[in-house]
Amino acid sequence: MAMSEIDAIRARLAAHPRPADLAARRARLDGLGADYVLPADVRVEATEAGGVTAEWTLTPAADPARVLLFLHGGGYVSGSLASHRHMVAEAGRQAGARTLALAYRLAPEHPFPAALEDALAGYRALLALGIAPGAIALAGESAGGGLALATLARLRAAGAPMPGCLWCSSPWVDLALTGASLTTRDAVDPLIHRDYLAELAEAYLQGTDPRDPLVSPLYADLAGLPPTLIQVGSAETLLDDAVRLAGAAAAADVPVTLEAWPHMIHAWHLFHPDLREGRASLASAGAFIRAHLEPRARA
Image (cartoon, rainbow, N blue to C red; front, top):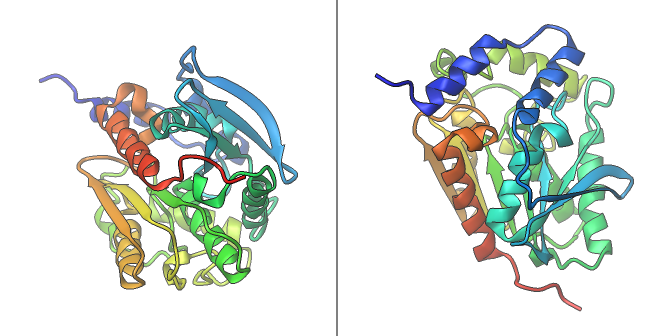
């Protein structure tokens, strides 16, 4: 029997296990993105947003008045513009928007709240450019999903305008590590395991309470959030983070859509050039964003 696409990706990951050294770990994640060449019609522009290193990606499908603001995954200690560029560009294509990806500061060199401060600065920079809040989609993968939710909590507390919608893929929203799937899915998720998450949480928290809503937004008051799409793979150790987040959002009267993708592993969107479900899930996210963003920026 021929190997399935997801099994081939599992084999690729098994052939390059996570190293112990932090610099090597960061290089490994960046290498996952470097394996994929950007389509010829993608334009990449280096920039800064509120003092944060960032980059735009644009495709011919992009409406310049619509922006997808993306926060990468990597457990707050790794991930970069390079690791997620190909995925962000395709998400922007599907959403019909230009994308702004932030290179927020990483732990352990820069623990909480550095990443949150950078995410807030990036969002406010878009508003300063004249982008309408309702024309912005805030998005995050894994730790970036939790960071996106924390950003919304801070914006709401400050009385700032909310973006048009939120997209979370494989979100990590409980740094107290209480989800049952951390155990039940441990043997099937090739990327994320409980012991590793505990190490990442320690590096990011450095003494902060893991149930603080700004690091674990599962414990936040989610009332007032914009329409939200949550995507998760059924083979993820973080499956329960996503399911519980969807329940908490629904209980807070947030318009929320939960998509559980059978057999998918953590952050499967990264492998979309080789994975049909990766392409399909990005198309679904793009359709969600198109449906919820304003068509043009306000004057």
